[in-house]
Length: 438
Image (cartoon, rainbow, N blue to C red; front, side, top):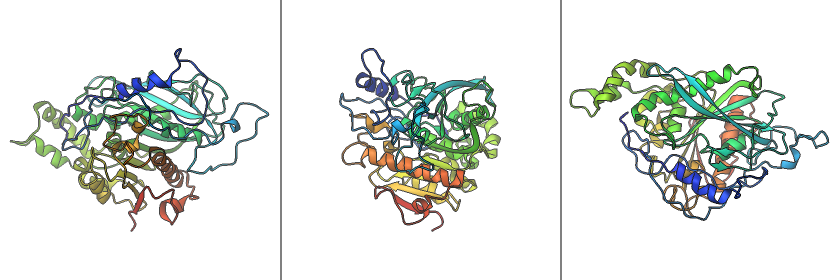
């Protein structure tokens, strides 16, 4: 259940392929809000083993880009640092459209000591609201030029902002769901994406079984960092204690683990019983780690969870009933990497939190829940991308809109969109809703 998985990655290839048609020759330009460019992939395609964590896989990317999603701010001219500019419309803003802030972006590194091994350094990417009208477009992961954001922009945090944490997929990058990040920043949230060192497109190879523990610890270290920002940090004093978390695939597992899911430790230890499939290094690790799994990796600072096509059914088992925060589970009925029958359905059945909601996309695949489909060609072609799957822009509008409605409801106490979650309203027929209370 926690054995190492083989991995290659398509993230680097995808970012480089996109950069070929997204950048000017000189890599310059002025950021403009509006229609989003093509984007990066989520965790790599390919089959999954018994743990349900998809291994990476190389992919060939065609020259042409798929249609871009209209995910920029609703009215970029309404959000400028000009004293004569029109004031922003009163909040809350509709969840099915981008907000009125422009988007700032920055990154930094965090070093912490896990319970085993050497000190660990992780990269964290921040997206946040700004009123800056001009600025330098960032290169996400130092590769993808993104004109819809401003690098190191001035934060617009006159009132402290809530936080949405994010965990990428297996062999992914912090920026893999950048359209979601930009959407939340445009609505006044701070979006914090943790990059899991040793499990990224640029440095993969960390033993997979260790990642089941280290990924949640990375997120908790990032939360600690947010709670102790130095006075000279641009976001210091600008964050509330209102926090939610989302993640895609292996990041969905990470979301559930940090959200308080328990582990089926007996089943995990059975791999190291005489005749079991556990490898020597895994069993040596588990001898020390079993008690930590029994204690779990939950963090009470989170108030809502949004796992996107997560893995982990076999690892958690009935421990998913220990989650106390409301869960918005999103899955794709045509997910070939983490099929509903093995992951989404048993995870939903085991969740016992009464305010939880499931959205299943009948024509959605694994990469419907990332920015993979903004790249044409083989990236996700048979698992969420292509004309026979749900339209990418439509799917992202629903994914972002329902996520915002859910975290507003359960983190901010804003029940204005409650009918979308629990009543008769809908953002579209592309997703089917189930309620845990039914």
